[in-house]
Amino acid sequence: MTEGKIVAWSKSEGETVSKGESVVVVESDKADMDVETFYDGIIATILVGEGEVAPVGAAIAILAESEDDLEDAKKKAAKLAGSDGAAAAAPAAPEPAAPALLPLPLLPRPLRPRRLLPLGRLLRLLRRRSWQRNTRLISPRLPAQVPMAGSPPKTSRRQPASATTPAPTIAPPAAAAAPAPAARAAAPAAAAAVPLPAGASVVAFTAMQGAVARNMEATLAVPTFRVGYTVTTDALDALYKRATLAVPTFRVGYTVTTDALDALYKRVKGKGVTMTALLAKAVGLALARHPIVNAACKDGKSFHYNASVNVAVAVAMDGGLITPVLKNADQTDLFTMSGQWKELVGKARRKALSPSDYTGGTFTLSNLGMFGVDRFDAILPIGQCLLHKFSTTTIDMGALAGAIMAVGSSIPTMVAAEDGSFGIKRQMQINVTADHRIIYGADLAEFLQTFAKIVEDPEQLTL
Picture: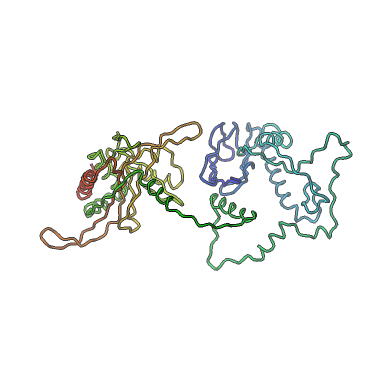
């Protein structure tokens, strides 16, 4: 990560903050993170606003210790902004810049490499040289070393003071007219720029897209070559088959008539109930009557019955998938569950789910019916019970799900009645993939029969 985008400020200018309090949300290459302040004080000035990007280590706000220091801090912020603007405009000024700020091609000879300072020492130097007491910088901390711009080359102890590197002088105008390498490289790109077609709009990269683009462009600077080779993969394919069959699974399909469920949905939709909540509630009630389908096997030698019925529901996100969990789906009433589900979906879209929101599922539900998919098979989510370590804390990711249900769309279908007549009914196809080590065909068939009865007579979902 080389830069971060300010998503939102939790505090405004003039507000008091305490050490350890979250003050800003920053979008990194992978996720949105809360950034805490390391000091107590008052936010005097916000230097980087929402939606703007700042490099790692740059100051994004100024913190004053008391109200008496606010005006002084604001003046220094204005001075800092002014100095940044002057530095940005320096190349276009007719006057030659200071020697230390001259471009490298104008120097009579190359400077020695800039010395590297740890970030902690650099911040102390900045505060000692450029900032008075009672003002501080808020900036992310990095373990890496940061080059200190403008640092003079070290002088050997054996050299006298007069033998140090002389101050660089300005090259003749003819030499100054030569474009810098960066300018020469940018010239073809600018010349090759193609205007946008009419009606086109520009969309800025997200932090993750920017990181991927920079990594891809960086590969162009590395000299590479390619070597091809043909490899026989018979043994590898056999190993792959054995690995994927480590957990034997099987699938059972079932057709469910949804006329009554669709009618119930139309009645309760105005009260905030979603079809996902209806299906999750029906699954929860069916699992409570068939606990073996809610069981799990971890080591292949034994299995356990889960104490609660927690239905994990797949949610599509930009570039990924996550399964928030509806806890105690068999006991929670339909309207409360709908509210919980809307909250979970909102947090998932904002990337704000906590581990407790998406762990602990004992059965998984995947619904593609809203996309017009009539049927599909889902993969059993093996590994939910693995132990993941975050820092020094070990978190149990929850119970291992023994089965997953794939729900297709409800479509009008020609159905033959027992008396030989024909009629149109709405039906949907559901397929369940289960761990065959503990769940057998008869177990799954009975579970699906119970689920179908609940869906076809759904009034019990509202009790």
